[in-house]
Image 1 (cartoon, rainbow, N blue to C red):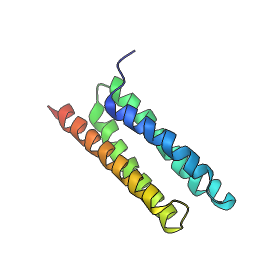
Image 2 (cartoon, one colour):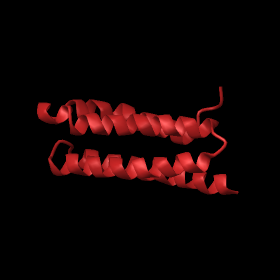
Image 3 (cartoon, rainbow, N blue to C red):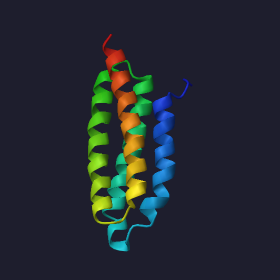
Image 4 (cartoon, rainbow, N blue to C red):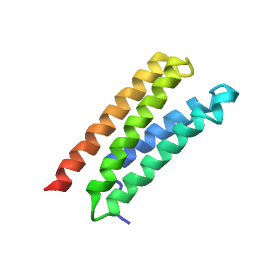
Length: 112
């Protein structure tokens, strides 16, 4: 088993932080918006782990960037609907910005 990369660990911590938050969404949104957010988070984790083992990391990391953008918009909707507090949304933005930078750096390194 390969060493877990820092970006995988950071995304894992994001998942642990956000799952209790989305569990508190209103009942009608738990099976719509919360489920989509959870699925995207887990898809990103799966793709990051795949990139660790993949020879063609570039394709996988480009998909991760796309999923991160979708996740940001889903959480923006949650914030605008007041399902997530403004400080919680700010913290989420900081974490996803860091994750995005790490993925971008990994992407640049995979071209070389």
